[in-house]
Amino acid sequence: MPRREAEFPTTFTEKPLLVMPTDVRPKMSTIIDGLMGSGYGLVAGLRREDVEDITRIASQPGVREFCPKDMRQRWTDEAAAEKQLAKDGGRGVFRLVKLVDHLDPINGDTVGYGWTGKSSDDERAKLPVCENTFAIRLDAAVAGQGLGKRFTGGIVAGSMALFGARNIGLETWASNVGAVKSYFAAGAEFVAAQNDERETLDYNVVSRDETRDGEYIAYRPDTRYFMQFPQSM
Image (cartoon, rainbow, N blue to C red; front, side, top):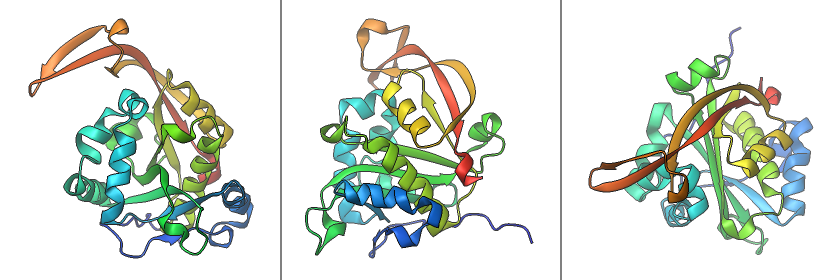
C-alpha cells in the first residue's frame, strides 16, 4: 500500500499540544526527554496569540541576517502568519518553550520556533527524495546552550509522529555555522552545495545592492547547503 502524503495544519489552532516522549517513535523519545530534562518543551500548533512571540524572534538580527523573509513576509503579523500556515498545503509549526510552570507548560516563554511542510519545486530540484522541508529559529537569549540540536531533532520527530511527514530535508547557508553544526549533530547529512548570494545586514561584505519597493537591500556571496534527515526516510 503506498504511503499517504503528510497532512499538515493549514490554519491556527486553539489547542496546541505539548509533545511528550510517548507521542513520538520509541527511538526518538530520548530527544523529547532531553529537551524536557533541560527545562524546555516542544509545543505543536500555533495560536493567534503566539504570533507576537514569533515576530519578536524573527526581528532579531541573527534571524534577519540568514532568514530575512521571516520578518518581511512569513511572520510579519497575524495576517502573514495565517497565509504562511496555509502555504503549499499547510505548515506544521512548533514552538520551543521554557517549562517554568509545569501546571501550564504550553504557555511558557517562547524561545524558538520552526516548521515543516511540503517542499517547493526548487527545493525538490536539489533534494529530489525530500518531499518535505524544515526550518528552525532560536531566540538569541538561548544561544550557546545546545538547544539547536535538540529542537531540530524534536521538530523532525514531532512532524513524523503528528503529521505523517517523511523524507524531510532542508536548505541553509554555509556561513550560518552554528545552524549547520546543529543540523549535523541532530543527524542530518549533506547532499549538495550551490554557490549563490544572499541578503545581508553586514555592509562590509556587500557584493551588490538594490532598492526594492523603496527598501535598500544588500547582498553578499555565500553557499547554499542542501541537507536531509536520514531518520525520516
